[in-house]
Length: 217
Ligand code: G3P
Image (cartoon, rainbow, N blue to C red; front, top):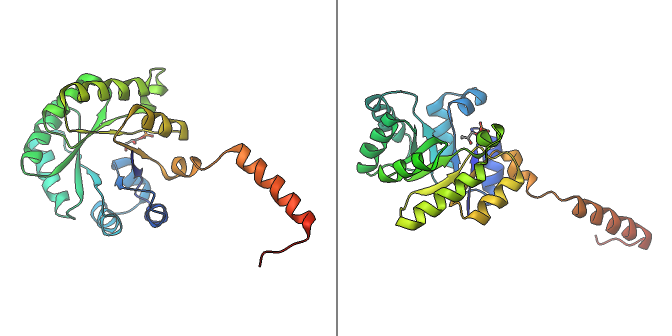
């Protein structure tokens, strides 16, 4: 499973990139707002840093507007993935932009039917939002599983990009189900390294080491 990081925070992206942990980046209008930066400036900086797909989201509601914004965002760099919402207009924009050979990420997906339509419209990525479904007492992981089954039944090439990831468990669950990509905030990727038994084991090793009075360096 590929890892994308869901942020527009350059320092966080740089740290994960240098560790070889990430294969791409996703942003959205809320994350751009949080960065306090100009969308084109910060997105260009991200694209210069990371070779993989970098999602930049359109904000128009009509397909013509999304297409125009998508073309403008695509000028930033070759690895831009244009993000459009899963509305009827978003699907129209997806079809036009993918026919032009551009990568498109169809976002705000909350049902298997929506994912099916995005695949028919030629989406490069479909972004089902796990956490926001879980927030409503629904099962976000079930959605990933349903989309995996449907795409595999018919050989759709659209990549399942699990989004709205809230915990380290979401990451391993998505990997078990077979999501192609999971995009997570930097803190969730960091949290994947944590285990209470690792901390406990390290404490015990260090306490015993102290008793030996030895030094390695
Ligand atoms: O980038 C879209 C998605 O990952 C947002 O997540 O936590 O705002 O539901 P969240």
